[in-house]
Length: 242
Ligand SMILES: Nc1ncnc2c1ncn2[C@@H]1O[C@H](COP(=O)(O)OP(=O)(O)OP(=O)(O)O)[C@@H](O)[C@H]1O
Image (cartoon, rainbow, N blue to C red):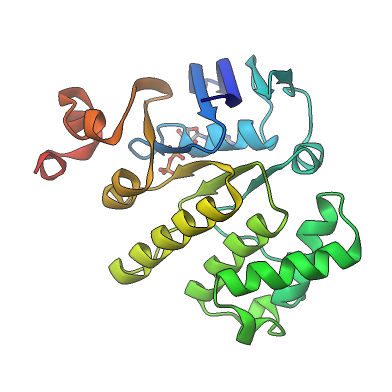
């Protein structure tokens, strides 16, 4: 599989704290990579490094073999890297449709492309009925779906998802995972997904990257990760072995 996105030797220090220490991550073109680890392992910091929201203290980020370490988030968005946030971060005084259109325009497309792509993404997430609702009036579960629609309507080459199932119940989480899989098949982007729901990660991902205290503990297939004694003891717990 062709390599799409890569970090090499990425380190991030916040004052005295080393949030990431010499981390190498690889995402293949069209691959779904899970990023897991205990609280504070450095998962969101790594997503921030990939999306341009956090400059690494050391190390490099490459997209398609091109060094993008110094690129800011808007430039990476125009190059096809799109992300969601744990706290969604919609524009509260814009409608659902306007939020999606703004993301397409921000990725460098025209207004008419924005209208078409936003309309399609709203359909993917069953959001047609909410299209003209202001973001600040949305219930939590719908708001999360809008966050995903907004990230996807720019038709990214790389999609970075920060806990898409956070706060959702089991049925909603399973539905979210099915939607991610379906959209992935439709637009074929590479995906890095942080998720605490291990069942979602193991069923959705082609490979899993495990972080612990800022370092890479293991990278492997869902089956390798599920049965790795060190991963089980650091993070998964005994139930994942079943
Ligand atoms: N801007 C910041 N300033 C200082 N410390 C930070 C900052 N961002 C993150 N950290 C610290 O870096 C470490 C890694 O945080 P990060 O949010 O990346 O972990 P995480 O694996 O995403 O955790 P969680 O699963 O709880 O979201 C934590 O100790 C956190 O407190």
